[in-house]
Image (tube, rainbow, N blue to C red; front, side):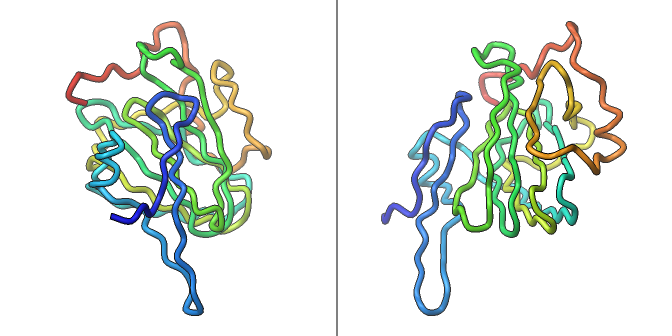
Length: 191
């Protein structure tokens, strides 16, 4: 099989950057966003069960930081198809050396990169331009009763958003800050 993308580990264990190979000619371009078998061979089980798309019209808007609790903990593959965004993932696995550490990376429609966000992580992003179109490949179905989130401006996390934060949803703006009772996301062996 032709290598249509490469995986690069990120500083948080289990998270990866996908560099997509672009096939371009006079008609335009083609790139494979994901291939379950190739990801499995690389040790990533991220078969999509749900595909979601968001459009964020205003620069500076932050969506997140969201996660799903077990047994609905999910792997996400995120892609930017229009505009530019600052994508952020936070390790919420209490047994991880990088518990409560965050990583952020700029994704653009022209960068031909995606991020793989493992189970046990929170995810969010900030629109760096107007009209950001983002696609998410999720490994589990959405379960509203198992949804969780962190305040995107939590001082414990100290995420360095590139722009002033605007446009938080009411739910995200009302999320509590992390306290000493926060235990993270404990994943079972099969998660």
